[in-house]
Length: 106
Image (tube, rainbow, N blue to C red; front, side, top):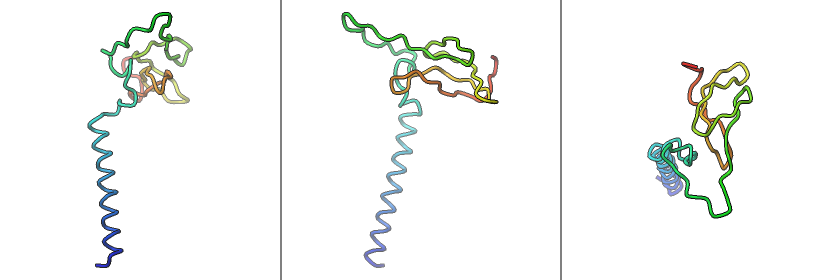
């Protein structure tokens, strides 16, 4: 086996280990890691705001224009699809996270 072939195998093994490591982190941390925050954990209570300041009143708006508070779910109509989605934070902005296709029980 030539030196180039050995390097290729080592490089391939490193790539496989890297991808396996990313997959493990995705399983260990969980899919909601990026959304961790006030709505990512129902037991999360932010620290008190500093004197003279307050937290912004964040919420989502459903398909009919109604306010939906953080952590609550709503049935959204997106084109011809109906999805059950949860109001959550994403990079300091309110965002909908799809929970299921269709709207069971709604």
